[in-house]
Amino acid sequence: MKESGIWTEVTFNSRDPLYLQVIRHFKEQIAIGQLQAGQVIPSRRELGAQMKINPNTAQRAYKEMEEQLLIITEGNLPSRITNDVRVLRHIRSELLNDAVDSFFSSVHKIDVSLAELIELVTSKYGLVRTEDTKIDGGGEQL
Amino acid sequence: MLNGVTFTAEKGQITCLIGINGAGKTTIMKAIMGLTPLKSGSIQIDGQPLSKGIYEKVAFVPDHLTMPLGMRLSEGIQFMQDFYASWNCERSSELMSFFKLNPKERIGNLSKGTAAKYSLLMGLSQDTDYVLMDEPFSGIDMFSRESIAEVFSSQLVEGRGVLLTTHEINDMEHLFDKAVLLQDGIVHKSFDCEEMRISEGKSVIDVMREVYQS
Image (tube, rainbow over all chains, first blue to last red; front, side):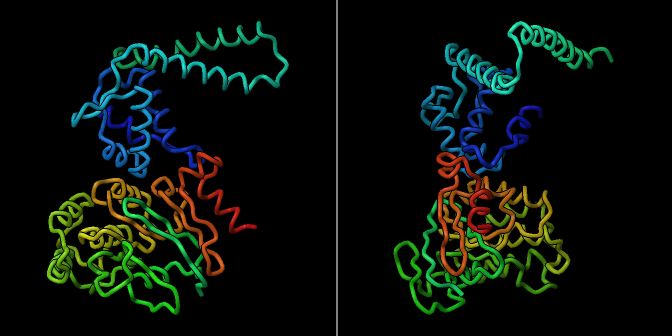
């Protein structure tokens, strides 16, 4: 049940290339552990239908992900996420780097010291982690 | 009035004809189906000039159902089966259940959304290489539109050439391969949607604003 949501509940913007947004979505799902190494993924056609995008876009995304060694398609078998740990680790660092770049482009025009930024990030980190634990643990407490 | 419209809609692609009301979208559709004569110029299907055999190659889905209101959905399908040699029963059954249509329902009692789904079923159940659709999404509730969009991405459409017109560009542009913008009787711009996003970071709506609001 939860699995199907990861393909159908994606929103796309209309300005960035759709196929890149699809790839990004795959990478995010891998980084947060929703997609596991070696996990079978929908066929191009199924993905297109679930994401409600043009099937040629799904095709393009898959081709690019195969080239990036993110997914593996062997013969007529269903495509799978790679098992290669190096590739998976690289995704994690790629997304983290993108997030930090994003953060810096938001704050670089504001006059703020690195020390202040670190303090801010540290305090937020603590808060965010507490929130995550509350959400995960809530079901059990009931 | 159309005055020199040139474009290509390819098999395996979904091409959207865009233009304000009166720009000539329906005229073009009807001309392709041989329902409106062309004063000059030519229409070619797979490199062959338009001929009486068009109905075997191109299915037309009009913007409103033209079948008798008292007819039941199942009777409509039976009629099409008898009339069109290229009718695919498996496909019509598949679409009937996908869209959750009631075969006993009468055409006159259908909501707009349901009528649009049935229209689409009519067009897609013909085994044609090309499908023309006039406003398949317009005036239809969001959920029906999503349902229809899902069919567009499926193997029921895959490999065929789809040419459609719609005003619902906002939500639907993720489905199109190509956009053709009409204005003042000519093609103002014709482009691949993903290429536009890649090379210029523009959505179809962005390009429409440039063409129609300048």
